[in-house]
Amino acid sequence: MRHNSRGWYLSTKMTMKSNELTYRMSLRAFQDFLAKRIDETQFRHAIGERDDGPSIHHFLEDGYTIKNVQFEPGGVDRDDDYVVLEFAQDAAASLFK
Image (cartoon, rainbow, N blue to C red; front, side, top):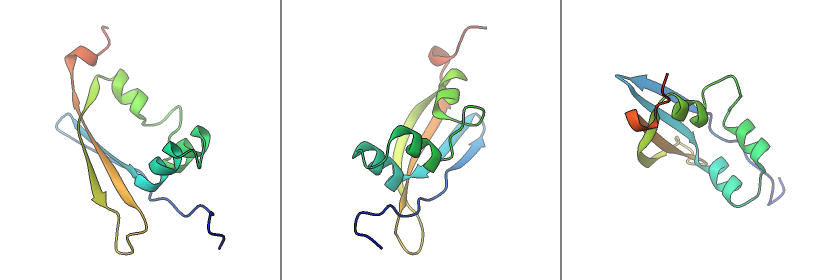
């Protein structure tokens, strides 16, 4: 109940359709990270990022680059919103195999 306590963050959502990937993460977690209210480890935990799971790092390694960024309401109570990153495959970003 303290004024500077950290609230709950929206869960990260990822969808893929026709080589286009949409990644929704908590805008509040992103803002807290940029404002240095949470550190990188806390931010990665808040958005559910793991070394063995989906991550922006892995998307880039797989040749996906950001094509659009937007904001989306997070729900009825409006406590948190989403920052929505849309990715598309880009041959220039793909690793040569």
